[in-house]
Image 1 (cartoon, rainbow, N blue to C red):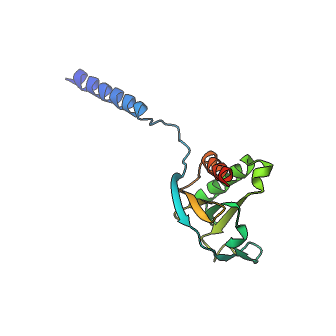
Image 2: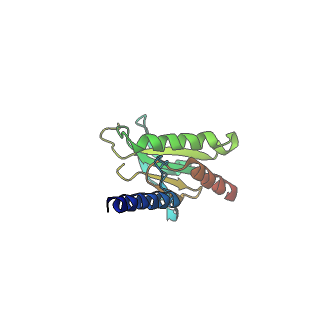
Image 3: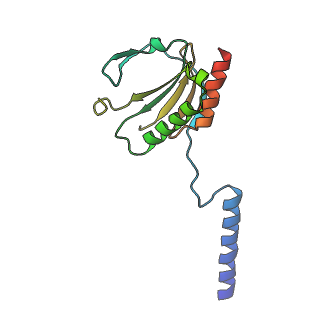
Length: 154
């Protein structure tokens, strides 16, 4: 009886390992990327205050592709990942592409910054939000591809 019970446990473990491997479950952590959504949301003009206490109006970015991220400076986890992703997007742009693209981060904690649901948005030259990445660490390659696609359309 004991041998039969041990054999059953071994068979169940083997099935579990094979199933886990078949469904892509591994012991190694996978990088988390934000979920990409195609959108068509018109972004109306808005005014904010920049990091130098200077008024900023979104209309001043007319004609540019704008990648907007929402974060806050005391965020210990996902916000640094968002910033790193945007840095990779910026580095991936050619010198010519950089002339037509703006990266912008908006704080979600203005009291402290003189995400509970982090969002990175890509807005086209006509102020239409075309893509939204909801979650931590948007895939820089995907954001870069979206930005380049919009630059080609223009």
